Image 1 (cartoon, rainbow, N blue to C red):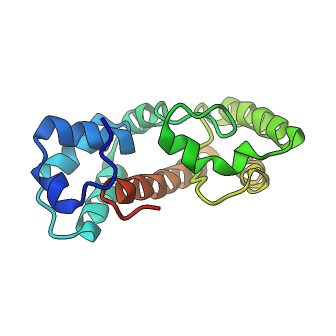
Image 2 (image 1 turned 180 degrees about the vertical axis):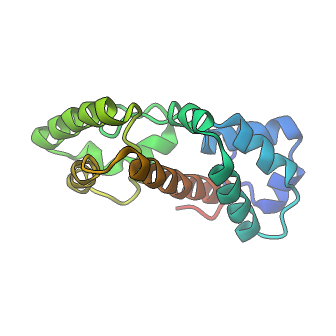
Image 3 (image 1 turned 90 degrees about the vertical axis):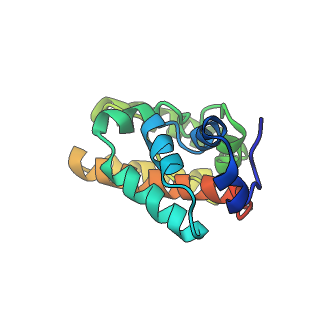
Length: 167
């Protein structure tokens, strides 16, 4: 079932299991989804976004790793409609850029032990490869912090779409 365009009042009124399911499409962390469901009703969308960011900031590293499992590699075949929309800029990429992304993804995973996560919405494949290359120079602590920030951006985009405020 798709929940896009629900509106905040409708989201707040969903049965708990349905609200959880809708949120798991946005972010694959069960802890994150449960915490957001428990915070209902929300007075406005900004309050939901703030709660989403706060809960994400408090998730354990193990839960963040679980969340990363819900995202395909940048440049790989997207496994959800959300990922396909977000990585639309890669669909038109030249073979050399796709190869660069594939190689960069592997180097990133070897160095950091998890997938390269970036908010890809509105970015070209060239931009995504440039960001990947730059982030390979980060230390693990810096990279975890950046990855959490990127995850928060993705969550907000997906929540906005869920509530009907997305593109």
